[in-house]
Length: 267
Image 1: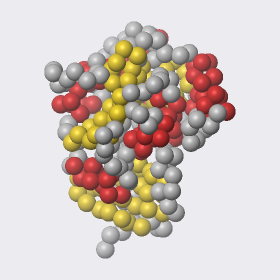
Image 2 (image 1 turned 90 degrees about the vertical axis):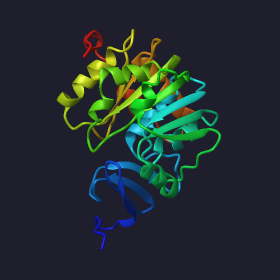
Image 3 (image 1 turned 180 degrees about the vertical axis):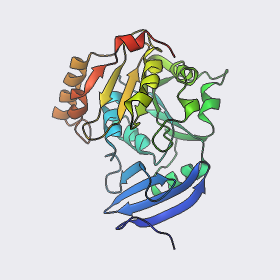
Image 4 (image 1 turned 120 degrees about the horizontal axis):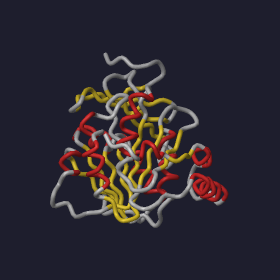
């Protein structure tokens, strides 16, 4: 008998490349967890409103996506339950999205339980993100890249190196955005990654804090990004005009420039 947290229904349990995969549901919210039924939520889907992401960092990602427009192409490194893909389809319906996911079981789960349907604007590639990033003949560039490849509460070490982050940067279009989701419980563990990230770009990056948890998004670009005050103005306009299916000003208020001292250091 499959045990699960009280009140949850187990929809799926199967082995994956990096451990057991669980899909649970309660009150119309479907959750993807790795390792055990009591693990950290990797994805949360509102089955009635899939374009409204549960995790705060994905809502902040919606604001980040509006810092450059129009978005024509996006690369998502890591699929999970497809929350970022659902969001981009809602806020940038003309954007062509490529998703790279190493685990075929995760791809199958996302299709079966999280409503991910590849089509001419959404392509899923099963493969190693390292292989993709370091392709010498890779000619595609992207307006937006999201690096969201958590293993429990940390980025896998090979995907947190300066060389990997730089390889993603090199796949950006001229005004493209590289967005990295960080959610480690210890600031000390995050600091080396923040320093590596900040040192990739000629001008300061920015970060969005979360009002409800310890996640944060790092955002960098080959060309200068808006100042924090301008990001707040953009967030107010988006909320006033209801351009997104959720408010984003809380993330705009928690926007700040990455420290310039960190930007001068390279790991």
